[in-house]
Length: 126
Image: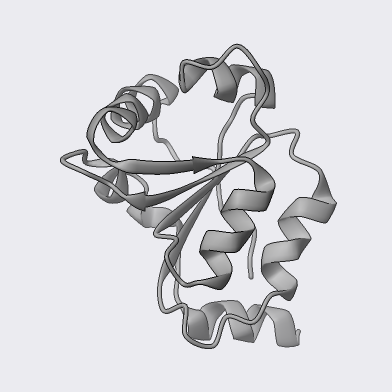
């Protein structure tokens, strides 16, 4: 799986849409919860903080993704404490998973970072 490119998406736009998801969608916070949702093919979007440990990022690359279809992976351009604050939490969040976007436009906003199963498999074979 290729590392998600940082696009011209504004941090304020991501934060605004993340707030909408938190209000009426479904977000699982933390690496363990994110991995569980990923393995159950429930993850639509995975967001990693810029300082998320490589071990956590690699866990998604190494996981069985045969039935996962398309998945958006976004590297949040700020550290885990700032990601936690953007989610309204007073603690760090290294990674989170969105399973239901609610009425937000976050999926459309982060679409340039979508990786299909075929692309992820091709990158891993190199």
